[in-house]
Length: 143
Image 1 (cartoon, rainbow, N blue to C red):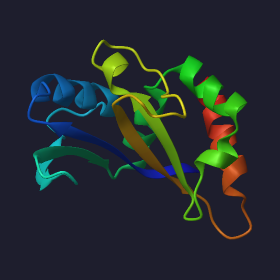
Image 2 (image 1 turned 45 degrees about the vertical axis):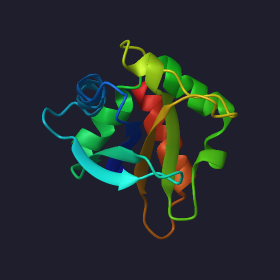
Image 3 (image 1 turned 90 degrees about the vertical axis):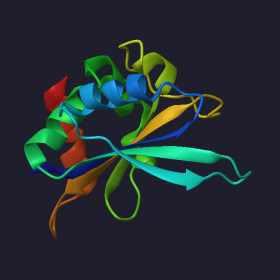
């Protein structure tokens, strides 16, 4: 029990160091050559690139969540996981991009005035099980 799959996503512009961001996403996911870049237009018109890492294997998804570190996981628990879980049983978190490229993992503040990497983790639960209890137990076991 725990996590079925995970996804990391970043929006970057042409001025960003794409190789550095890609290396950071690979470290965070624990998988080499896993970043898929999609080109798109921003709301204001200039082109942007969306970096996506999809992790479909349970073990790799769990390991990716563990890579954020025990301090970050403890912060998630103390902050309250229920406000980070949506109706589809996905755990959402945002990690500071500027810290990640330096090799640190820190959750973004609520005001979101900084660039971030968004993580979405699908919680594995079945009828009769409470997904909040499952993810809480999993995160506690990682710390």
